[in-house]
Amino acid sequence: MDSGVIEGGLNVTLTIRLLMHGKEVGSIIGKKGESVKKMREESGARINISEGNCPERIITLAGPTTAIFKAFSMIIEKLEEDISSSMTNSTATSKPPVTLRIVVPASQCGSLIGKGGCKIKEIRESTGAQVQVAGDMLPNSTERAITIAGTPQSIIECVKQICVVMLEVSSPPKGVTIPYRPKPSGSPVIFAGGQSSSASISPQLTKLHQLAMQQSPFPMAPSSQGFQGGMDASAQTSSHEMTIPNDLIGCIIGRQGAKINEIRQMSGAQIKIANPVEGSADRQVTITGSPASISLAEYLINASLCSFPPHLPSQP
Image 1: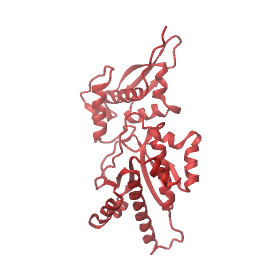
Image 2: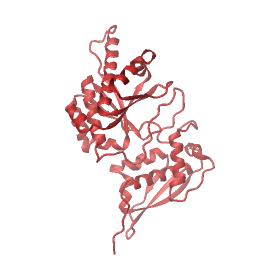
Image 3: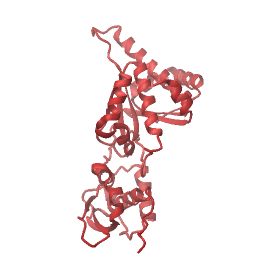
Image 4: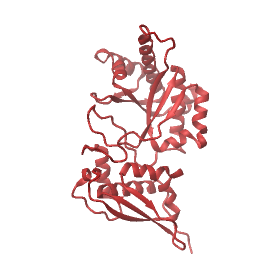
């Protein structure tokens, strides 16, 4: 793709989130922060690096597209330099490709992959980069990692094309996006399915649970155990039923069940949708789990319904 298409046609404010290992981040920061300071000054982009003491860290690039891709190019060049310098004393005969990961909302991955994988195939063929979209969401988030490998130029071109898809009006993020935040090494992590050996809870999930308790139009059992109890497999299990209009049931199931699986993973609750009953305009949805898991599942279901136009009953 011609870079003018991005710079001219999509000259908007953009945010790209990169997921990197600590060693790579150290190289990008440079001695006393000189390297990242130079990148900020020369590109004009805002470059934010998540807190240290984690095996992985998030680098966020924000600003106009021209500034973003200048900063992105400088990061790729630095990674390429590191590979070249590591080859100096190496016995390897071929230089490995530059590899990096970007993080995107899971709800946009379908648009990026395309029907039958046609979009991702087109991006691979036109840029020459290898692109792999992770099947699972990153722990404690509603985001997925996209791994890109190739020459610096093919990676830059590939990310530009991914950004074009992400910015399309037809494929905005749906529902609540909980960003991935790497955990310090040795710290317990709660996975998207809600399983953990610890009561360490991310601020995003706690906040989401509070929203669920406040905003859901459905009555919910208050949890004296709070959200931590909800993530504990030994917490008291109960069931709750919701009634969803037939016309809207597709909004919470999603294409090939993607949305309902995402809600199950995020909340840790079991969700069963009853078969349609003849003569009924509604479907019964049964949610089973701890009080916190149920309320979170309800909130996510309501968020999915709210992202669609309200159901209008047909006139008699």
